[in-house]
Length: 350
Image 1 (cartoon, one colour):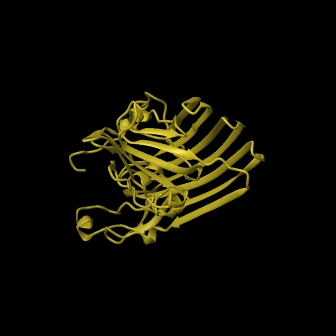
Image 2 (cartoon, helix red, strand yellow):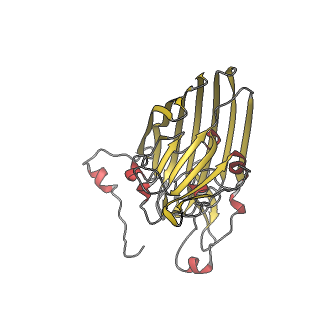
Image 3 (cartoon, helix red, strand yellow):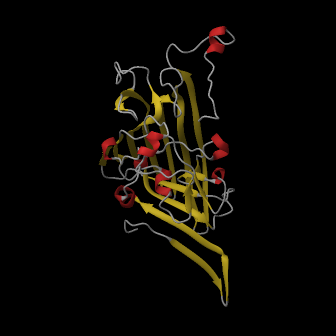
C-alpha cells in the first residue's frame, strides 16, 4: 500500500483460454489515503470515488453525511450492498439492507471495496465493503482530525428565474463540521491491545421555502435570518443534524496461532427539524432521536495448519430511532384538534 487509490485486477488463465469470469475488481484504501482524500469521511462518500460504484444522490464534501446516500454497482439494487467489519457482516435492515449504520471513519486501518468477482461466502451481488479495523499495537499512539466548512463558501444558485417562479429561499448547507479523536496502545505488551475513538460530526441544512412566522428570536427558534426573493427579511428553517460516535476495540493474541477481537460502536443521532420544502418549521417538522443505534462484533481466528484456517464470530447491527412532534404540537388522536392539524397540500400547485 503506497497511500494511493489502488485497483487490483486478477485474471485466472488456463492457457490458451482466459477465464474472464474470475476477474476480480477490488480497490483498497489505506489509512494514509483515507486521511488525504477530501471527502465527508463516510463509506458512501469514499465509495463514489471507486470505479463502478454509483450513489443514488452524490455526496459533495460531506453534505450527505447525515442523510446518507446508497451505493450500487452493475445495475444491482442498493439492497444488494454488503457491509462488513473485519469480515463480520454489520448490514443495516432498513430498506431491505440499503440503509447502513453511521461508521466512525477513524476506526479503520484500511477499507476494501469490491464490485465483481465476489466469493460464494457473500450472497448479494452488489458492492461488498470490508472495513479492516485498527487494533492498537505495542506503542501508544493517537490522532486528531477536525474540519469546518462554512456556508458562505458554498456557491449561490438562487437565480432570478427561481425568484420569478416563486421560490422564496433556496436550500443550502451551513455549516458542516467534524471532530474525531483516537487513541490506541497495549494493555499487555505482545498480548492484549486496545483502540478507542470518539467522533462528533454535524450538517445543518437550511431548507428551501421553509420559513418561521415572524423573525423575532430567529436563532433561538432554530432558524437563520436571510432575505427572501423580494428582499424581505425572513427566518428560514434549518434541518439541524448531529451524530456522536464512541467506539472501543480490544484484541487478544492468545497464542501465535490464536487470536480474539471484539468491538462496540455506540451511535447517537439527533435531528431537530426534519422537514420538506415549504413546511412550517414550528408545526410541521419532526424531531428524530436514536435511543439504540450501534454495531458490534466479536471474532476468533485459529491457524490450525498451513492449509486450514478456523474462524468463528458473531455480529450485530441495531438501528432504533423515534420520530416525534415539536414541543406543543401533539394532539390526542381522534379529537377535533387532531383532525384540524392534519397536513393539507395542493400537489397541483407544488
